[in-house]
Amino acid sequence: MKQMFLKSCLFLFMIILPFGCLNYRYKNTNYYKQLNGLGKFRNIPQDIQILNLGNSHEEAGIIYLNNTNKRGYNLALGSQPFEYDYYILDSYASCLADGAVVIIPISYFDWYYNYEEIYMSEISTYNERYYSILDKKHIMNYDLKKDILYNKLALLTAGKNMGYIFEDVSWIEQSDNHAKVTNIDVVADYKYNSWLNEVMATEGQKREECKKKICII
Image (cartoon, rainbow, N blue to C red):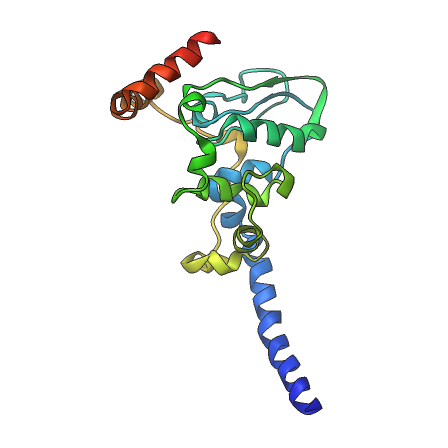
């Protein structure tokens, strides 16, 4: 019985040790660290003088490089609601300089979408990305199973992406984020009209409710 127990322990050790090493290597690849646009959270500078949060509009539209003499940083992410603007600010406030300016833009998306429902649906990946940058008290609908699968033991959900352990991608500097976008006015106009005509137009009542909320502001 004792011998069987020792063999079982040895067998488990032979499985756990390689998995642990591969999981550690995967989580330290440039690919994983930058997954879902989170590379900017891995090397946040200290003494930030001007910080912006927000969603994809601000992520692409606010660029501090060569535009200000202050130390600016962009922590906006695509489809990021007010709740996470606050959670991120609360978690990373120590990186701000005294008297820093914090910009939290107001987007019509925040009035239109119910993010609590979205993050529980089939596109819950918008919520799962936060497991590696925030603690559980700052995550909507926190789920321990998702924390394990997408953060602590990320190799379990890596699939073919575990190949980056052996051939990684290059690191993309935050300062270069969307700095080379061409025809940005055309792109912005297209995105706005697509949302207005394809999303808002399909739900008249909700559209009017959204307009009323915006007018109150």
